[in-house]
Image (tube, rainbow over all chains, first blue to last red; front, top):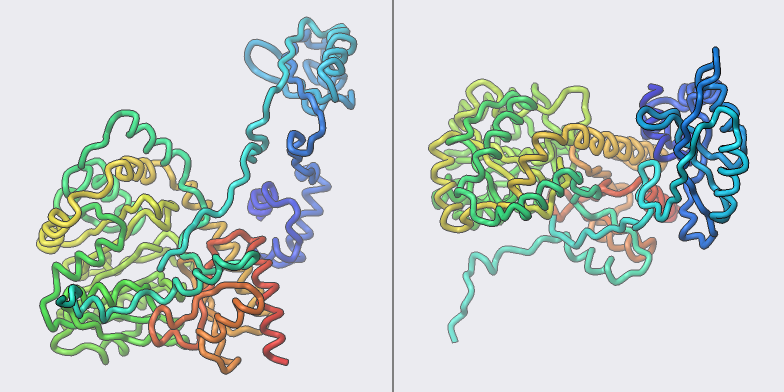
Length: 160
Length: 388
C-alpha cells in the first residue's frame, strides 16, 4: 500500500485524503495512518510547491557546483557534506561517482551572489580541493515536470 | 438530374454523438466528459521511433498485410497477454484502426439477408457497417440487471436460421461492461451449437479492472475457428490518431478480408506500423501506468455517484461509466441537453448507442481527476435541483 500511496502522491501532493483513498480503493483511516507513519519515518520528507520562477518574473540564478574534496578520517564524505548542506544557500547536495565528489546546487538572486558563495564559503573549506561552477541557463524539465510548455487538450470532436 | 446518391447510404443515420460537441465548442467554460479517446499522449519512445523511421526514409508502402516485424510482435503479444495463438504469416493482418477490420469482416463474411446479432448499447459502427455489407442487423438489448453482459439466453432467443455473425463488443463502449470467462463459456456453447461466427471487438482489452484478467472468447476451446478477433493500438497505447489496428482469424477468412483491404486500402500507414513495433516491444510499463490512472478515476466516479445516490452498476472495463437517469423522468437526450444548458457539462445520451441506452448517459473518464471533479460538482448541483 505504501508504494501505491507514494507513487500517487509524488505527482499529486495536494490531493485530499478522501479522494486519495477513493482513487486507490482503500479506506481513509488506513491511508491516514500510513501517511502519518511515513511522515514520522521521513519517507515523506515534505510537500513542496514546484515553481516555474522564470514565468513568475522573479530573478533567480541556479548554480550546479562540481566539488572535489578530501574525505575526513573516520567520517568519510558525510562530515564534509554536513558542513556544506547546512548553508541555507545550498538547495541540494549529492555524492556523485565519476570525476568529482559532490554536486552542490545553489540558488541565489544574482550570478555574483552565487559566485561569492562559492569563492568565499565553499572553496574556503579545508577539505575542498577544487570547484567548478556551472550556471543553469534554462530549465526545461524538473522532477518529472516539463516546465517549458503546458499541455492542453487537443482532442477533437469525434463520433465514437 | 438523376439522384446521385445510394438509398442505402442516405437511409443510414449519422452518429448521434456529434450534436452535443457542436454545442460544447460554442460554449466558453463548458466541460466535456464526452470524448471517447485517451487523454494521454502516445508514449514518447513510440513517437521517437516514428520520427526515426521517417529519418531513415521508410516512407514506402508496406506489404498489404503489414510489416512482417509488426505481425510477429502482434502474434507474441497476443500469446503473452491473452493466450491466443495466431500465426503471423497467414492469420494476422494490420488494418487502419480496429474500425477498418469491423467493416472488412462483415464484407468478407455476409451475403444478402444474413443476420448479424449486435448487442446494444454498443459502439456506433456495427449497425451501419453490417448494413453496408448487405447484412441484416438484429439488435439484442442488453440489460442493466445483467450488468450489460450478454447472457446465453438472450443469445439463444435472438438466433434464427439466418444468423451468421454475433458481434461481441467487450470491454464495452459505452457501458464499461466486461464479459468474464464464465460468461464467455456460457455463450460459446450456444455459438457452437448453432454454428455461427463471432466478431469480437476487444479494442479495450488492456483496460480491464476486475480481479479476473481479460479473457478473449477466441481462447476458449472450439472458438478460434469461428472467431474474428479485432484489436488495435488506439486505446491501450493512446495511439488514436495513428490509425492502426489488426485482425486475427482463421486463414480462409483472413484471405478474403485481405483481398478487400488490398483493393480499398493497400496497406496501413507505414510510419504508424514502425511506431507500433516499438509500442508492443517496450511499453508494458506505460500501458500499466495509464490503466492504473484510469482505474483511480473510475473508483472516484463510482464513489461520487454513490454519494449523490445516482444509480450506476460498477463497470470493470474501458473508460466509461453508464449511470441511470431514469429517476428523473426524462429521456437521456433531454437530460443531457439540460445538463449542458444549465451546468455546461457535456455527456453523451445513452441512446446514441442504441435504443436500449434510453435512461442512461455515458460519461468518459479519459479526463484528469481535476476535470472530473469539477464536472461532477456541477452534475451534483444539477441533480439536487432536479430532485427538489
